[in-house]
Amino acid sequence: MKNIALILASGTGSRMGLDIPKQFFKLKDKTVLEYSVSAFQEHIDIDEIIIVSNPQYIDLTEKIINKKTYTKVSKIISGGKTRQESSYNGVCAIDDNEDNVLIHDAARPFISQKIISDCINSLKKHNAVNTVIEVTDTIVEVDNNNYICSVFDRKKLRRCQTPQAFKVNIIKKAHLLAKQHNFLSATDDCSLILKYNLAKVFSVIGSEDNVKITYPTDLNL
Image (cartoon, rainbow, N blue to C red; front, side, top):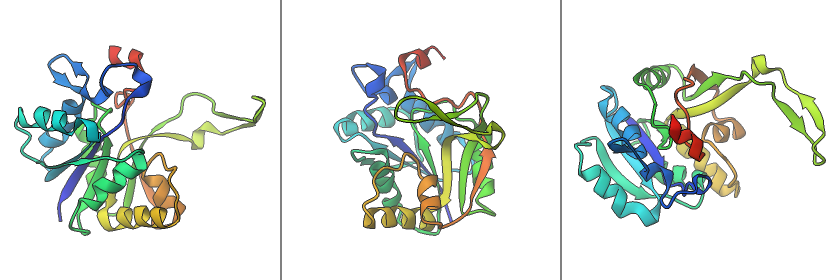
């Protein structure tokens, strides 16, 4: 059984306003993508890395990966039009259903070794794992007219990050069910596990540093 990192790098980064997708933006001497790949490359328990790339940037992705010694990268495949489709493509690229997979956003370049370890260790007892952090703001629900209609108890709320980790057979089944039911709007993988009641999702503690680069101001970090 292997621990496989599946890095999703197929987004367009439209909210960034850059000439290229944010995963290819350079921070100091490396691209955002390289920081994420390096974290899994350096982890002792990660056996293999699969990168899901924007189809228009496959050549650039290969050029970036090949110029460095990323020996664990086994495949670079094309992503889809949505995050869900890209994740599906990546999961289906894993041959052995008995493996573990850690699905990570390339746009989270500051992922720590501890979080990766916590996800892997949690898969020894659980079939699905999500990385989360506490909510510090009060979260409200608004109606169509922007009136607040509900206030949630933030003690019970968490913000989701990645990696999200799974037994391959479980997450592959979740994606296949979603495809069969034409459900295409999932923004993360754990929600598919819960939607089809395939497993309980265990949570591990993430980090405020494990930010997702989304807006230009995030690059200041």
